Length: 345
Image (cartoon, rainbow, N blue to C red; front, side, top):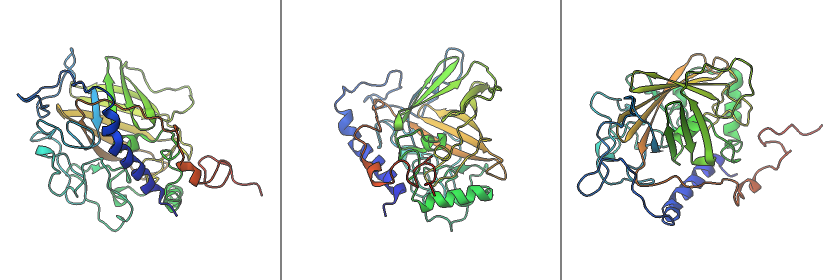
């Protein structure tokens, strides 16, 4: 049987491997307004850029815990390290903040935060949270380790076990559908933030996702609107350094509600609160509080780091173009397809 979770990562690995070739078809153009050393390499350890009103500007192309100047690898210039007194690295067993020089901080398990890990076979490992009680998130497991999750309702436990037993074949990533925000945060393909005064747009290269974060002071919708794959996001500033984004009204259909590759589900009561900070020019930190009383006994907070991808662009990714992998899993109307009705008796 094909391990669909591994198939997802294998497909991503192939995409990243060919990205340099694909990117070579376009002229190289340096990212503007990036501080440079005498040789032209980006200096990413300095203070973050700011808008005219003094707030941190989160605009840029961001990679999940990976390269500092190109896709999937180290680039020139200084590393996007967190400054002293900033975000703490995770202890052994968890993913850690990028260390100086682009290396993984000690005790980080050999993977950059948000870049993977947390996969199957980690159930026997103890949970080692960060000193502040957060958990470093991962692509396979939203809390990096299943033992870090709060107790789950029985229906949610059963659904996750079923998804894992089915080798994650119903994950929306398999079907070229929008994936959950935490899967996007942890995805190896980059995302781009375009920040304006009243709106922040986040484009995700994976499955060509587009997310709107409203910064104009609007409240949560109260007219029972149709839920969205990306939820409904509103942002507010805490001072000039932290953008707090609250998202509700998520589509909770079984085909949509995947926090991670292993299938940790959400319900229609999900509220996600993201705290965006930019400790240095080249480092983005997002702390995400997941509050979903229909699934979890209590809220919990996970952390993601993303590194600035300079002198590179987002690549057009049309998931359904020449897509053939789903030919090997059940067809529409057959058991096992996301959202398909059960067979007639």
